[in-house]
Length: 531
Image (cartoon, rainbow, N blue to C red; front, side, top):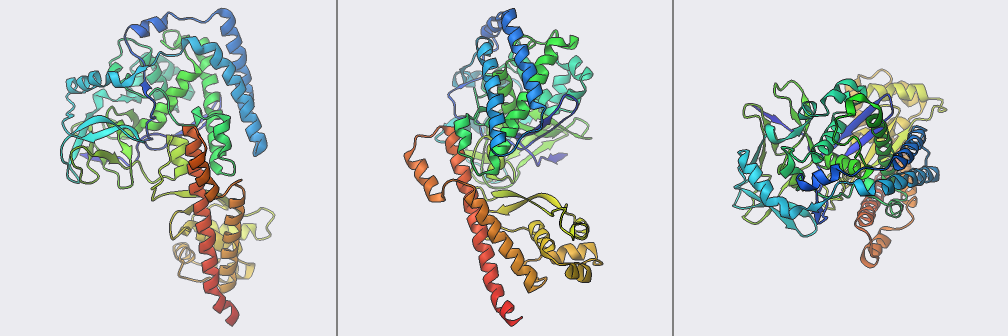
């Protein structure tokens, strides 16, 4: 029986403390275009295992780890203070990276490992007759059709036994630590990242051929420089990137200390070789490639890395991957018709470009689902706070939350419209028309663009949206036209280019929202004059 998979590779939003961790991953991300990739699991693995840090270096690292735990456990700042904190944390991390540079995993050229990977797939009864790995200009490695495919044709079936899962992690050297550590027990995705690192440090790993074709690095924010991040000034994504870096650093510091002190870690191949660079790589691999699959009995979902399928790049469309419980494999079907030689794409899910950049390391300029997050809330000093909150709750909304402005002709969704209308109502309108209304009918009416609560409320709604959108545009230190000029004339790093592309997309959405609000106001003018 097939189980529809509605999530794919992972982007990461992570909040971590020594006592609680909440981690969520978004769908698959684009792979990095770097030429090199994961290390060999052969002789080089043995050579790496013999590398050791001096006692002095270990002590210095541990002192720095304590500083990181202390700093990252404090509440984060905002604005300029947030960036200053980020620079301070990054400075400490760079000292650790410098001390660990000689024990990082050795990378080899991934292209040389593709033939062995293909043989490994065949030996595990994976039919690769429809696809082959190919490098595409501007997109890096992906899957190319080796024959004509019709829409709906199955082109891949990957069995569970070759996937890396949280279940296989529990059966590995990590098992005892997972059983004892309460944090790992609620962090399945991080368990998978540590599982990935342990297997890479094990020369005889069953997943060696797969590990060897993974990218060397990624374009996730964990690899951004401060100079790259400055291009996101004015964008909400800058704070998201900083928070991601801060949380992963805190997580790394926690596990580094744990591995040095916990008896269950003594036999781990990464115990004395747990570097920040390696952990950053493992987390990014999971962020950009993980998917959820059902457990063997189908009772719940678990996390997995799915070899070969995780090399598909993204385009607009629909989810076309299912999990067949009877055959115990992930099955992927053609999103559309492809001719021999075409690149095969899959749809990662409806995500904004900010989510794709932060969680997956790329910006998709043709993104039909692009949107921009804006935080709105009813002030507690508002005399009508309780009444407005009550009406919002009956509509299924919180008095303070994140809303979205969307790309395209209709930037406002029903959630935002309901909030703005209630936000702008006076007491007479709230009590007289909406306080006793049926919740379902109330939500439907307030979320309908074609209905008018009152001309006064509607004018306030669109005035507010136009003003807010204009102010948010002014938070950026450049225009869309200047972004175009920067991309054409300046030599940007790949990460910096992604940041400029994202801020340009966001400004276009804001500009469209302001214009839309102005049009709505104009349509209301005759009614207002009549009133």
